[in-house]
Length: 70
Image 1: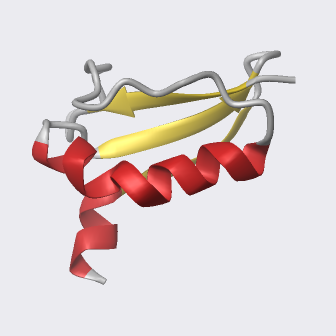
Image 2 (image 1 turned 90 degrees about the horizontal axis):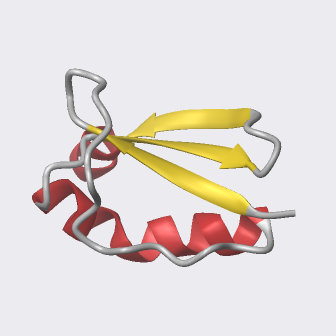
């Protein structure tokens, strides 16, 4: 199974990420990657991210801005 991130602006439109993600074979790998690169993604214009599996099932969405404010 593959896991992918969708990157969105504050308005909810899809945007290209500042850091190109790889294809992740586990949810944990995808989450580790976002934990490492979230600041660069936010600086590059992505405000929100959504994690989906290869069936297109969205697992969750989260705000990168909220991570910065925490």
